[in-house]
Image (cartoon, rainbow, N blue to C red):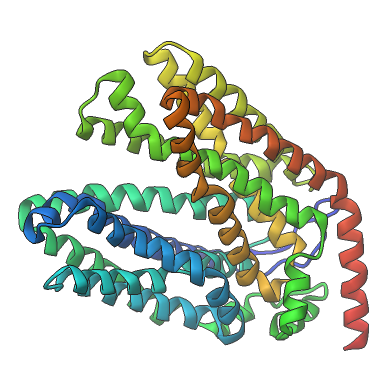
Amino acid sequence: MYLHTAKPASGDAIDSPSVSYAYAWIVFALTFGLLLSDYMSRQVLNAVFPLLKATWHLSDTRLGSLSGVVALMVGVLTFPLSVLADRWGRVRSVILMGTLWSIATLACALSRNYDDMLLARAFVGVGEAAYGSVGLAIVLSIFPPSLRATLTGAFMAGGAFGSVFGMSLGGIVAVRLGWRWSFGAMAVFGCILVLAYWLIVTERRISASRASTDGDANLIAQSAARPSFGALLRGLFSTVSVICAYVGSALQLFIMGAVLAWMPSFLHRYYGLAPDRAGVGAAAFLLLGGAGMIVCGIVTDRISQTFAIRKWVSAIAYSLSSFVLLTVGFHLHAGPAQLAVIGAGVFFVAGTSGPAGAMVARLTPEAIHASAFGTLTLVNNLLGLAPGPLVTGMIADRIGLLGALQAIPFAALAATLVFAIGKRYYSSDLARLAKLERAAAARR
């Protein structure tokens, strides 16, 4: 059985790939598995903080730097490495990246001191920097456009699940075998997946999957093109609506990053939970956020099959829902009702990830999708995940943590406005892009 193009949704009529269900889902499973390995290798460090501190007598600043250096490398290198992957080959890039972070994680296990560990962690960050954007570009290239929100939401949720698995499994292994084995286990898991990827997924099969009827030769020609840097930038920021997709997604993740970073402290201060129990509670909220990405992506694809504009409507609905639920939740008295309402808000707050990713894919050429998702990741970090916890802490120093968490959800109103602007320009932007594509095809 094969995946073929159904009747395209209104305003979203583009060619879709044709590839066997079995192969497509195997590629998705392997790519998703590597994403889990990515975040497990990144977050296993948190589980062994106490053991590292005792072994090497490290200060909290040095412990924090071992985590921060990965985020630094990811933030600095995401965009340039995504651009290189579009030019050099996405599958080859994935194999190289997975190999690098797995070997670097193994080097963490073999580290003799803090300096060795810091260098190894930096290379973990280099390997992981562009994986999310490149892996997502590969997945979306072999599935129909009607599944883009679902696949984007599910793929991005892998970060939440991988973080929880990395911390929980890393802690279990560390208690039984020692902290070095925690890193070693993550490295072995990554190497096995890289080997499977190398054996099963190839550039040739991924490229062949794009070939079908209804003019897919044009799509392949576009994919093979190597745009200049100027053309790349124009493609990434060509329309008002794609910029709105970048910014709206980041504003929602500003809230996600803030709430999840401070949830352990919130549970400790206002519910009297011990740090370990507060950490477990925060992990439950993280899983709720990951589940929301998947479910909201599925719902978005279902309701937008006929009218693609509904992707914007769904993003607006998720933003408003998160604003209402989180605002109400943080104003309730401490208790089960408050936690339930906050949990519902966390479920919706990252639900815009699927629609935003789908809209970025539609509004940028397929040949630069890794670069486009790299841009989305960069904006998500610079405007969302990075400043969210920091701004919350600054507000908390002035009015208390609860007051800060009551104020942070208002970013969802800004996201709602941005998504509404994107919806307003979407149809005209699609028409303009179609005109440009026809002109480019005529020149070829």
